[in-house]
Length: 354
Image (tube, rainbow, N blue to C red):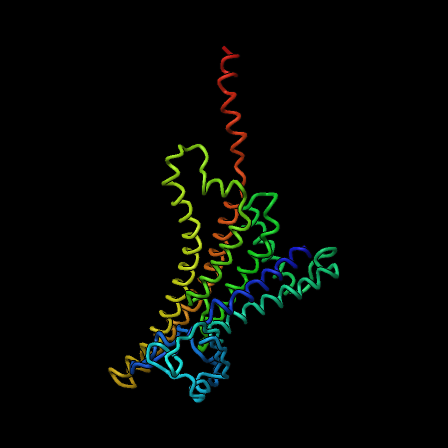
């Protein structure tokens, strides 16, 4: 278990290394005069919103061979080196394009929060296991019991179920890490002022890309044989099968990214829209009608919050489950040579029997 905990921490570090480069993007929300800015609640921002205000985040830009650091977008504009263009965000004053935008954004903050909480839970549980608690004696404390229940569930119900028996153990830490991290990202999105990081396609694509790397790097010779030289089919058929198999390598992580992104984005938009009806009714029919109808909309939103919390867990489970399935398919050995030998000897056995 200690080795598996260490692997889980290593998986977490990999996620934290990949996320900054792939998550950086410019997404400044624009107010359009509507009663409530629906998309502004789900899009990425250059500030971190709190119940009592906003904290503006650093801008890190690479343009024209130079790296620029600013404490906020406002400071970048005050420097005179960048100007704001509608629809394009920040651009350099001389028209030089921004080659790379590594700015800290609101969604990235919630990704980091989720990974840090995952790390803390895993680290604390690992320390207790080193002392023998949960290994030599029964687990003690709510944290360790929750960790062990989750870890054993991922190991027995996903890894062991879908990955070859002699190979599944080394993938348990990764599957555990993505399940807990995605669950936390989804649940953070339930906070009224917060944003669901998984409602950002860049985030889900990053997670799917890491699963893609783990899958392909761990792929067995038999896996690659099925991609480039599918056994048991005529050579001419490979002209059709090989491109289809190669395409399949990329459609699987694509489906992972889109499924998680679409479900979490639609849930957040639905809640914001329903609450927004209070403002719509107030603007159309007056404050009295708006407040009176607000009781119904708030109760409906509360019910949807419970449903969205369940969806947050289900989507994390589905992402982890499919990752386990894809990894299991890649590492599996089919032993075609044994099958071909058995078929070759079948006529001889039949002849001897006759």
